[in-house]
Image (tube, rainbow over all chains, first blue to last red; front, side, top):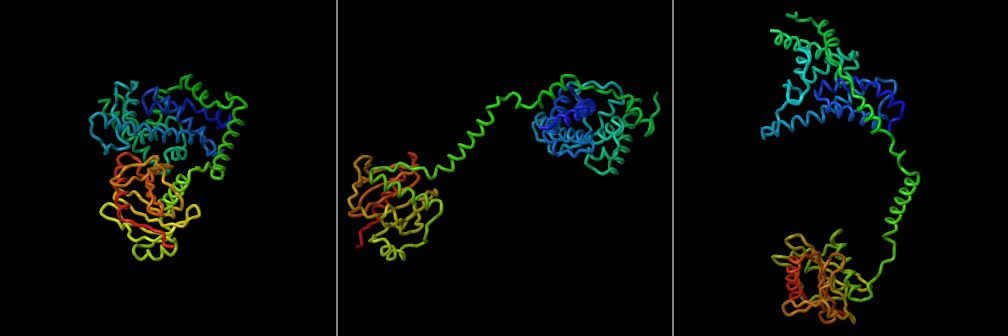
Length: 169
Length: 231
């Protein structure tokens, strides 16, 4: 069980985590579940957190890993259920089409374009540009080198520009 | 038409134009509630009680093997229990000595005082595994182990009968024989007497179907095996 001080510090990042979860899941109840699960794990494994390191990056890392573990798995299961044929070739990171019936409406072209990016590109942009995280923290969340983060940001922006161009035609 | 932004502008647009979603107040409350220590709701006496109960259970488990056991008063039941123990030992650990018929017969007779003028050495259903001397309830005897096609181990034991009397209860008519069927600890045992030798055939074939086959095994062993006291 996490100590009260750790809980208080962790809960300071609630809004940022929820915002990130919303862009990952595009569904408020799912985002809430994801954030709850993130805090559940963070508090359960708080002893593994090294004080003095970045709590925010640690929490985002847990949230993203949880998302990849559970929500992607469920997406795959749904793909199997719909056509009745196992689709084992479904890539882990792919351009996810909007599920208008279930997902929340996008407000702007920019948001719509962002949603169409693969998760790895969407995440680096959200962390680096929206949350303002230093590249080192983003690298920790993504569990990859800083150089990879830089190249992903570059490629993500390139694709985002392409999508925006399509919308503005 | 909006001009396509460069990298820096795009970054600024993302930070400025993307809507920011705020966590509902209920979410914070749910998280805090979920992580409130459960012990505050638990009565103070519950933890020591559970600990004491767990300790008592562990002690009971340790003491179980040394607790006194009720021994059956009937001599047949006592022998059957000893034979079943021998059978389960062979089942778990195998034979003490791997002696194979017929080379083992003189040695067995010398060791046990029980001679076997003829022996069931297996057939299409039962494979002879081994023969060995045993010492049960202060009596020397012969044990022979067979394995059937389904993997059941069947143990034949011959012991000096002395004044042992096979009880009339549980007698079963099989062909021209009437052995007694005794069940103990999940095993079934045929008990019969051949002159001065008490004979036992034990296996774990307790189900109705298995028991029918076990009757057949009894006939095979009984008709082919002739034990007698050697001295």
